[in-house]
Length: 192
Image (cartoon, rainbow, N blue to C red; front, side, top):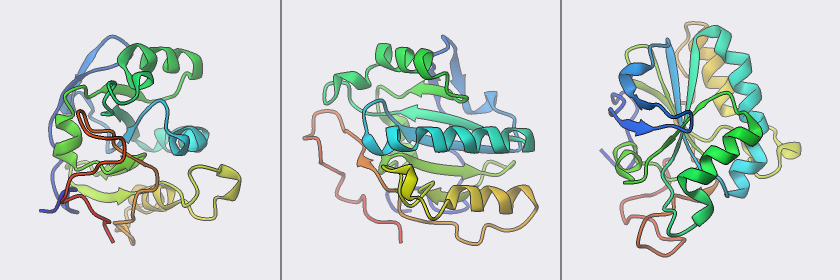
């Protein structure tokens, strides 16, 4: 296995606090399809595509798809990525996903999160069927020409195999604790 989970890998378990005051584990989500995406509070690629992600959640929730956002960024690198700011952001924007805090960064390591945002789509057996970007222009939604996440979800929710299971996530790198802002692990690399 490389740094990031390989297609067909099982979703690593977790137990993390959410902005709604509940601690969640993987087993708490019984939906047919689970989208786990690594995100944060400050990244311009996240902020630029939040409303696109909201629309995708609203489109696919009735089809048995659940979304979980995970913030693994070090608050020592960007204080605005701390848990109180996560709670505030969810109150302000009322995003339709559960927002989890991975303060230890163990979940980011287990999944091999590269960037914010970085999406992982798991089927009912919790096997990875898609990983990478949601859209080709996350920083400026007016320039989007491709929505890879919706293509994968369309295929999956209609019983087809995901035709392009891996794309490169586009965004800021995960902010690793104790490292400079642009540092990435040596084995973290492009996916395709």
